[in-house]
Image (cartoon, rainbow, N blue to C red; front, side, top):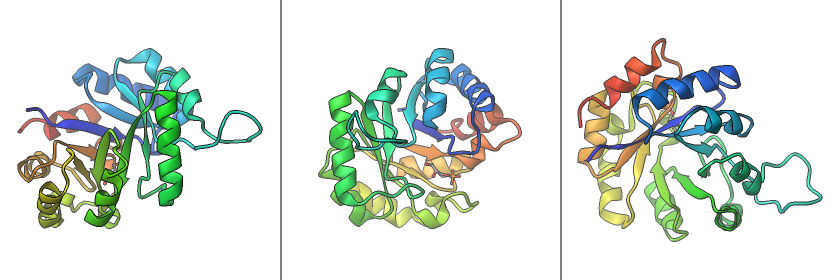
Length: 210
Ligand code: G3P
């Protein structure tokens, strides 16, 4: 089975640049999930058929609240779901729980990130649509989760009942191959693709093997 691919745009790209990157990804595979800044969702869902996720949403209700990203707002812009609890946007367990509830009410899927097996086990109980294991110390680096933490990926596949993805430092097709062999259904990537001179080439290379 083809691995599920998640591309996190982070804040590396926004506006016109984010839309251009999304269009390039759309040409390669429309099943790829992309995580973009809330301000880019509307334009990107208009311009592509990709599954667009917000990189975060808040749990505030509609009304007297200033500067929050509401699940309803990103849903109106046609986002499919939201990332939550990424290591670069960590939430307390209670806030995560509340935000997941709000996402459900708004009809948004949730992709929740975990930094350890212990955290993944806790998050699994909340029944997210997707669970992604990313060791924070490897995020944005050149050593991948597959190279550095094969034991943890294996442990996850033994201890977690739900399907999961892995991410951090993924930069070649061997990284993807190892992750899938050890039990992940897909991978999350950012810098290797988003900051590549030729993102399409890099993406094709990543998905060339399994
Ligand atoms: O969510 C994916 C991301 O945190 C991984 O980042 O740059 O290590 O591929 P990167």
